[in-house]
Length: 570
Ligand code: ATP
Ligand code: MG
Image 1 (spheres, rainbow, N blue to C red):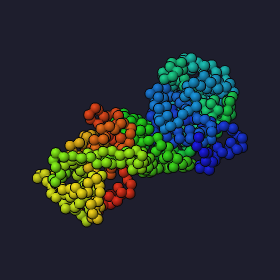
Image 2 (cartoon, helix red, strand yellow):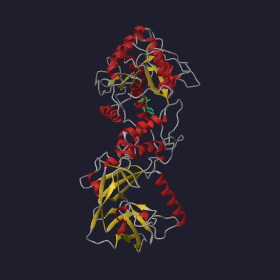
Image 3 (cartoon, helix red, strand yellow):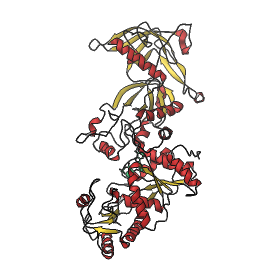
Image 4 (cartoon, rainbow, N blue to C red):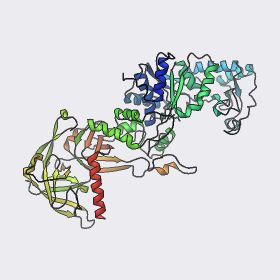
């Protein structure tokens, strides 16, 4: 159990006060998803809050599925949500719960309202109901059936349940106030007739409670003390309170709203995420570009990085947007600690060390993880022909260029010093096809033969020993920070980034990576963090995914040099 932090945010302050005042003696929270999609990074915030808070205050948190809409829900999502909550590192109290387990109780409470003259059966169609509702500036109109007698309402509602009426022909509505400035109080629908098979209750019901009728009461049935939810439910609170005031509910949860998480360059709308999957824009809910927890997991996000991220961004009462870099920085920070290092060349060009014997080879020792020397070392094979990164060579070196260029001495990471003496190009494209070089055997193993300064260090892979792989590089899914938000008549899918996936088919990897396991993070030196993809890798044909680029100070420094070089080149 972590320490409670009462002043960290308004919710923790409130809970601390409620405990102190004896309003509650134990904190009970819940995470209440609708099983109609896969959880995303926004849900992670709600999950961390509900479970984290209960943990901190020595209370408990439940998992409850608000499964009131059989048309959109399925067992597939129920399973996925459980898996993702567990993956984040949380355990719910007892068995998962379901609003559908409370259908009988909810029905009984609806009858209580009917008997008090507080609910009526309405014959308006969906469209008519909407039209009668009025607008924010215009009061609604009473339904023609609003004054039906209690007896008639009871009879009709029971017959609705018995399946006597066609789908959509009638609803049960609360009788509150059609002129209320809060639209949620304008005689909201409690039940609709829907002949759909429910993934848990099967064909038992042909009327289904609306989300608003089920959600708050489910919290009350479970004696949730603090019902945490996002800001869009703020003006539903009056309705939930009205319901609890008029039924024989066992408990009175306190609803507290907090801001939704929006992350730049991505979306957290289940509907839009589903559209991307349906239209094949991404290759499934677990596409590594998706902000879904399974997409992030596949890409190499760790539960710790997501939890730390959620901790950092905190809670407020205003919706805003968090920069994607904040999320990525948490991943970098976590992977920097845990990832083993390896070398890989993504855009290979061959470098031949002409004064190194053709039939010779040797190995150099490299640290597995400089952040954790206890992990030990690995042997990296070296030979006359190496792969190096095309971009690490310039035929004409700009000022301050510390990487390969004719006559320029450079350190090969862990190995030795080399100097390019000559190079070959493709006569048609002008692209460099081969680098010729010499090495200084005295520098073997990274020792410095004399006081001479060698500023640049590059990575490399022995051509003879290289392990070939496909590598997938990802960029933001959207080109714009406010992804998914468009003016009327505009198409949000036009904001998609056409270059969000780049496939490198012939990457050359250090041979130790042949033993890589899916889900284990590696830092490919100077290139970023990568992980082996369980889904797409085949025996002998590995696929590595880039989790996130490297942007430590070294990378930034290098980036500046490259930019300077580009300026000079142009
Ligand atoms: P829907 O439109 O289908 O209701 P939803 O994103 O609200 O979509 P739910 O399954 O109802 O999905 O969400 C479960 C819980 O997660 C709710 O309490 C909701 O408030 C919270 N939640 C959903 N999206 C976010 C988000 N972006 N940031 C924080 N919490 C979120
Ligand atoms: Mg919702």
